[in-house]
Length: 271
Image (cartoon, rainbow, N blue to C red):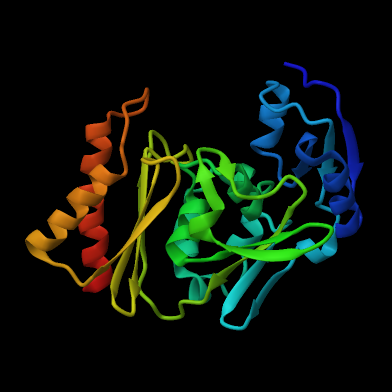
């Protein structure tokens, strides 16, 4: 299919991006990797009047470690983060999840922040952001703000970003030697997950996060649980996610995956 007509701007500075977003608001879209956006535009699911390409802005292509966090700019491709030397040590959960994002070809183009902006409830990077308790850095022409991951995802492919805001970067806390675990079930490796789960330790116990079931990735913090107490917590969480039947899986199958994968991952992290 052919997209509806739009204007294209190859931005050289962040100010150019913000100017376009201010002028066009919801009629403007930011182009980074374009792996999801261009397909939506070609199918006319999205019909922007203005497409703003940010991939030539050097300041948005940085990965920096500072103040106990890793800051990942809006233009950082998934393959670039996967190849970053400090990834496994600083962000072990992301190191586990990233190889499951699409395929090598799509990771060479797709961006970390682009996946978050798209907000597919089955995607791996939104799950990692929520599990780690990261922040999204938002910038408009008049202000900057940081939004916790739990507040950023507002629904299926819906975020709390205002129309005039750019996702400038995200920050993820450095975990160091913490033991993390990740697993997903999909039809084929590289497909969006039917269910994806992540687990990591917290000072008080364990955090368990799930994607692919509810409209947004969702996490729960529990004390150290074992045996029937863990089974009860996982069962309650599985039902709270309000799974639904679709062409890929039944609600029951998704709940069963949450329970079985959750038990394995939590045991792995707490051993």
